[in-house]
Image 1 (cartoon, rainbow, N blue to C red):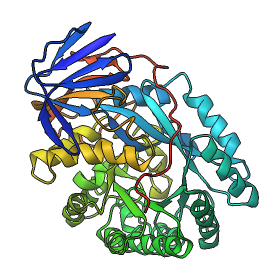
Image 2 (cartoon, helix red, strand yellow):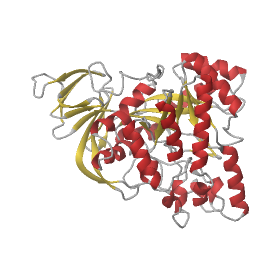
Image 3 (cartoon, rainbow, N blue to C red):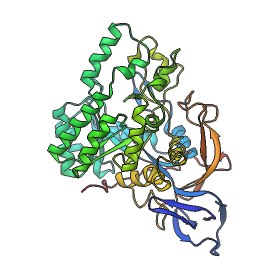
Image 4 (cartoon, rainbow, N blue to C red):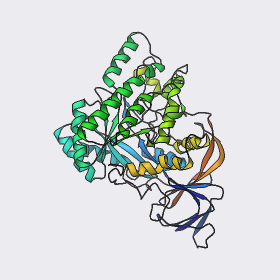
Length: 461
């Protein structure tokens, strides 16, 4: 069917303009002068509102195994929550276990997601076992539309990769055009600090932050950048949280190296003070890298303005406070690492516009357009333009809302932003031309979302 979205301000990364948007089937077919006469099966009034491309959350963890449990959102519940928040594409992580193949891992994650997602989705591949076989399988993953490979300098014994293993994977990435994604924290040193804290009886959640100091994120980021320079591999630093890590990324980018980085809303709005909340409340904020002292926040906003931070993703990995986070009572190292956020990313970034931290166009760029380009989905995704998928969000910039677990749609029993008052709210969401959120109701369905086979990073030079 055809849909006319009329009276709104279309906001792309390149600018804002008053225009009507005509959708036919799954595609945007025209941008029209306001009021241009055209027939459509349905009309959506966007008067006084923004019309923006659907958000792309390039870092989520649905049904992820961690520490003897699984993240609380399934691909169905997590993508429904994403839709409520104006995100119409997620890129999740298939997690290779030691001793298994990348292709069997990809098959396993397809089985989890296929027929269950309410919005479109893709996959990155976590490489935890670097062997001749897995390096060869990276080529097959690329053929299957998965061309980004995440590695860890953290979590020894689980995901940790040595510098030699990272170097070999980066050499394969340089050969194939793939991008290596890096969790950059010095896990060997962190494990020593954690053991020392527990031996001294320091067991509260705040110790999670104190034993993962910003300096060790900065060191690992610098080391990953050096390995990428030696190999000529593209590098994407995930969930950057610390000024020291941002400095390393900035210096590399200033030399023209193919180094990119994302941050997350929790690092822009929350801090070590939240980890220090009494009565084990701090466990709700345990994620890795940890929340930092507040002074890091202004540096991250600056990085977003200068494009040294290119993307904001959520690292959505929710664990319920009851029964899951509580696994770490008396031992902070056993608290499952992760926080919920997929539903609130677009809103929280709009707060950056409200506060004057970023422009309206930059909001769209970091929430949608850059991740589309970074992960090989543009111009199908990330833009309001003829020929693009009709992933469209009508956004009310004046609406007021309060974030709360009582009203969110994520399958988790708390909100990391409980009670936060914000300006701006998603009004209507289209996913490939289907109205999935409107008038305070969800009208989509599990299985509507399709797997996205992705091209290579479009920013490589």
